[in-house]
Image (cartoon, rainbow over all chains, first blue to last red; front, side, top):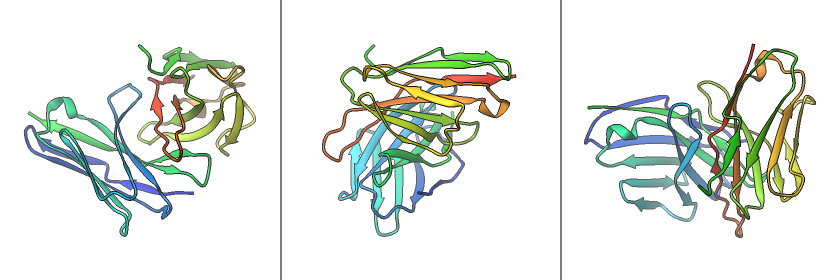
Length: 112
Length: 115
């Protein structure tokens, strides 16, 4: 199988940048994803990165991928209270069912 | 709204009862996935369909669980003789495969509570 790990909690002040980190073990990963989950809701796809990229920027979101260290990060610029949620890193397990392997999620709290 | 929809959104049942959940994927998406999410955890894969064929089942999917996607569109997940350990959020996702790229879009989930 695959192991995806994230830190559990992160608190930032409104207006600051947030950086959420993730490590994974599958060296054959081609796509890695970030999803956002608000309380009681399903998962919202935020962004993804293909493994031949080091960085991807999408408005306030920047994804950095260090394939050698199997480390993925999501940076949220100018964090707002509406960004408070749980953020999941996910790895596409192509050697299996093409299912996603998720980390345990990082709960981001934005302090006004 | 053309996203993934799931019904019901919440279900409370007594231990031993059967329950059935429905998922309507984004139209024309050929793949449909079921995941289970317990409190404080990330979603875990249960099973997936490519069109109407069920191609993979996780070892998490005990014999009491069955899933169907009869016409390659909507899917149902049935749990027979529910147990308290089945209490979780059941998430459905769909995708349209394009080469190696796979982007799964999730529904709002069905939250099951077994008393």
